Amino acid sequence: MRWKEAPLRLALALILTVLAAPLRAADLTIFAAASLRGPLDTAAAAWAAETGSHVAVSYAGTSTLARQIAAGAPADLFIAASTAWMDRVEGEGLVVPGSRVHLLCNTLVLVATAPAAPMALSDLPARLGNGKLAMATVDAVPAGQYGKAALSALGLWDAVAAQVAQADNVRAALALVARGEAPFGVVYATDARAEPKVAVVATFPDGTHAAIVYDAARIRGGAPAAADLLRFLQGPAALADFTAAGFAPPPPP
Image 1: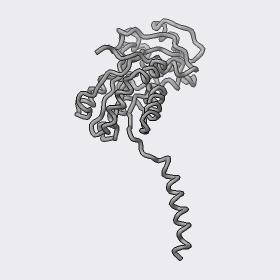
Image 2: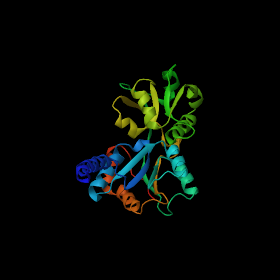
Image 3: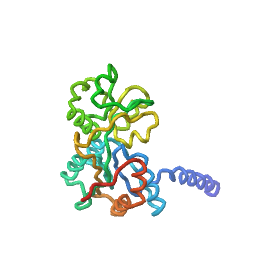
Image 4: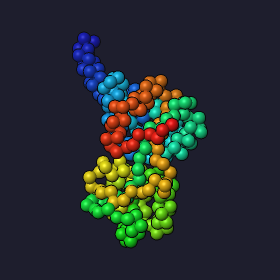
């Protein structure tokens, strides 16, 4: 009887092995701002090809990721689109001391559903009419915070605030414009570059909002190999992927 059961047991074992293969746990996990989707995937794949280590990237709004890390979510690296949110995570003792670095910079732009011609930012209230202005959550997500600050500095916030359609993250705001659900949106230049269904119609002056700097840091309790991955992301190959997507190198120390 046992010999008759052996082939069945072997078959079941093989099935379980095949089913388990795609569920291989990641060697390293990155929590990253949604605006990094694309070039960070490319860099992570290059790292995996070079080292054989599997990297999983979890994308969301920086504020959401920071709260998840504070709640104990397992992450090896955190890349934030806001130095303020990284300050919070570091202030709670969740960052490996000395691991925090400036990784990249970005630019804030006004986009419209394509095709669209350049316009003056001061014309936004009139051009918006009864339409919606897509933005990431203005009181929590960095892209939304930068956008609100810029519009306020230009004296435009009060005129458009009631028409702002807030999204969970900047890519979700971009999607509203791409689908024509909002005629205008405030996003990063890199987001606009990645979406052919929108056009950049204006760029917000740097002085109207805080510098858009992406900070990266290792998270306490993470794998030691995260240090090597972070160095790789600062290296020339990864930087080439990021700059090709429209990001700028980090500011000088």
